[in-house]
Amino acid sequence: METVHKIGRRKTAVARVYVSQGSGNITINKREFKNYFTTPTLQYKVQQPLMLTENLETYDITVNVFGGGVTGQAEAIRLAITRALVSINEENKTVLKPEGLLTRDPRMVERKKYGQKKARKKFQFSKR
Image: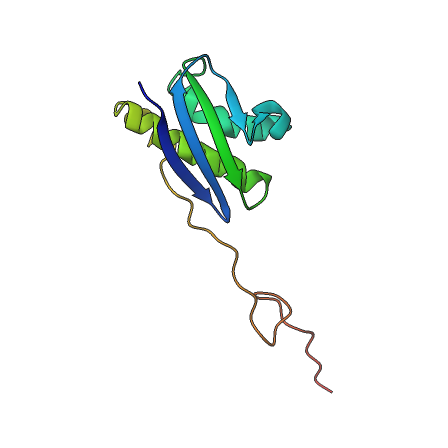
C-alpha cells in the first residue's frame, strides 16, 4: 500500500493527512500527537475513526494542520483520517457513516454586521 493523502476541514482549520502502512504512530506538525493535543478529549477525537475500524496499530499517520483553534484542528484531522480509511477500504464506510464521521461540519462563524456590536448583538438602545 502506498501513501494515501486526504484533506479535512472544520471552521477555518485545514488538515492534510498522509496515511501509510506502519505501527500506529501519529505525527502532527512534526510533533508527537499526545504533545500536540494534551487533553484526552481531543486525543480521542483524533483516534476515533481508527478505534471504530480497529486500526490503531495498523497505520502511520503524518498530519499538516493549520488555521482555527485546537478543537477545529482535531475535528479537521478526524475528517481527513476518516476519508483516508474509507479510500483504503470501502467496508470502513459502513462503520464510520452511522457515527457521522464522514460529514463535513458546515458551521462557520457568522460575520459581524455594521451598526452592531457583533454578529447579532446590538449596541445598547436608549429611548431618551
